[in-house]
Image (cartoon, rainbow, N blue to C red; front, side, top):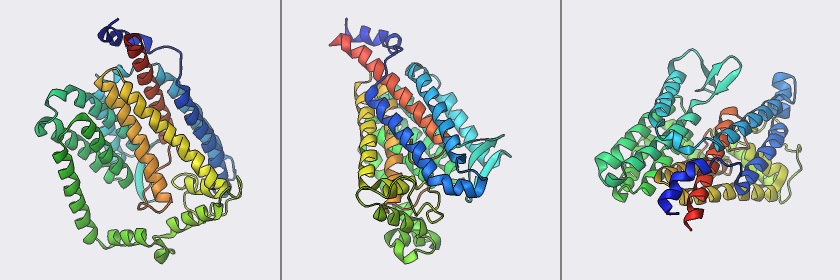
Length: 383
């Protein structure tokens, strides 16, 4: 059987019942750890606000069950079906982001309008916009591969689409998600073969613009100063990062034990969402942190391998984009909690409390498994 004929039968063979255990195990392990740590980090807060220390635990367990269902479903949906849906998915993402800004269903919390609420359900459109951008870029980069070096074909259209999504997200405001969209687009265009001079030029322009806006706004400059020396501003802007570092410092090698964190007791803001990694560092210590990092590294490594072995360019770009988005979110969240990056409101995949993030990330893993299965089905007969 030739490689071409093997690729032709890959969609049918990819619908088998096998699951990539090297990818599935670390994901389920992280989800299990996340449920335990969400309860540990949120029990005091939930008891005070809702009268039950199990409030966030029950919701996170429900999100995890829904996420597993979507993982199984997306594992058996051929990834090539997303190719003709690239523009409809992108249009839905734009409508949802616009709805956050103008619709009566927008939900505001902490000074930001990032959610749509219908009944008792909340959904964060920025999470779906990230997936929509990945599908669009994968489709467009594959379609424009012969002319990818042309700026009018391979560079400007992708930057414009990313820019529109990023501007809508910045209006919420959600700077962290906008940064992920920009980094994701840069990586996918780099792998797709866009001229490096265009990409480096973009970095220079964005860097100069960021420096200008920082220097001409006092509150932005104060944030930069807080990042450089959070202890000097420990009572206001640096409060979060100072208590996050205190959590890591008090965890030591083996941690204080599950449930024994002090910083989660109304010292560390959002201990079950943005700063759950800090609670893990305090309760599980350096050993627990290393285990978490190794599990994430295994997921990213598997995603890169799946991208390399995908049977077509669309599968390569789709797997790469999904893996890059996960990797960027992991690195940014960990960098913020460790004081290596300025504070951003991003959750930690599979661990932090939040339905939109957990469910869509689980679906992402299912899509990666489907691409991996198609790659194995295509190339094994060829060898």
